[in-house]
Structure formats: C-alpha cells, structure tokens
Image 1 (tube, rainbow, N blue to C red):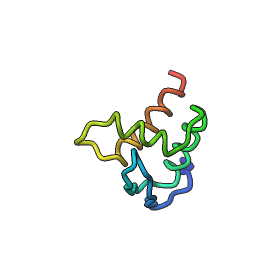
Image 2 (image 1 turned 180 degrees about the vertical axis):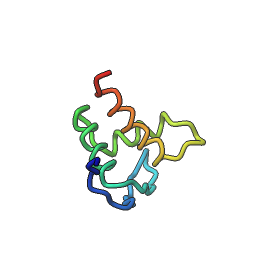
Image 3 (image 1 turned 90 degrees about the horizontal axis):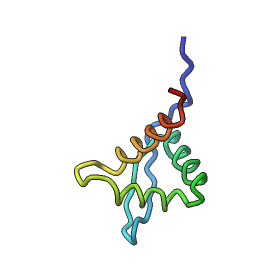
Length: 80
C-alpha cells in the first residue's frame, strides 16, 4: 500500500502580479512547494508566481502553470 501525503481541497489565495490583483486556487502542498522553491532562489513566493505567470502561454491557466512548474522541479530533483 502506498502512503499518500496530507490532502486538502484547493485553497484560493489572492496575489498581486505586476500591480494586477488575481486569485489562484491550489492545494496546500503546491503552495508550500512554491514557497520552498522561491526560498531556494532567494525570492518571495509572489515574485516566483509573477515570473511563472510572465513565462506561461496565454492559453494555459495560472494554476496549471504553477502546478506544472512544481512538478518539473520535483522531476528535475529525482535521480534518473
């Protein structure tokens, strides 16, 4: 049997990106991971979210881009 991490429904949080206020719904595990990834880069979570927002394609939602960014970071850190 596999062990699952603590699960939460998506939590909506407001962020300001380039002076524009928006809200994003993510599970707590993704909020925490974004915070850790930002800390490793020496920036705030909001700054990291803004960077991801500016790099995403317009047809990709912000929450999706954030989840995929976290997934890529996890995959990059796993031994191959």
